[in-house]
Length: 104
Image (cartoon, rainbow, N blue to C red):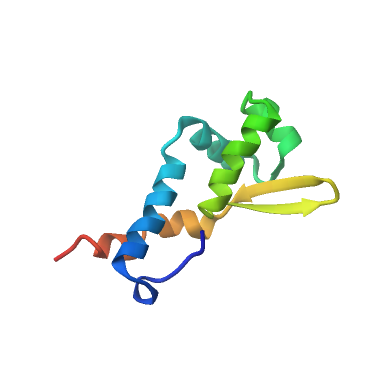
């Protein structure tokens, strides 16, 4: 999911994008993954799986949802993928832009 500014797209597109982002956040396991990345910084999926007590296949499912919502970033090095929070996107979710959509 790409970042945008309110002026670039219709309100329907803005609402749809935020719906996807908030759906990604509305899961306890994904919040746990985000918290683990906050506490530990960048992590390989092989190190993340035991910390969040989840098999790699299930973890990959949750990471894909967070990636699609642009909430985390992924960097591949060799055969391993490393994940970290996308702080710019997280800060943007509670931005003045979102607040302005609901002000008169």
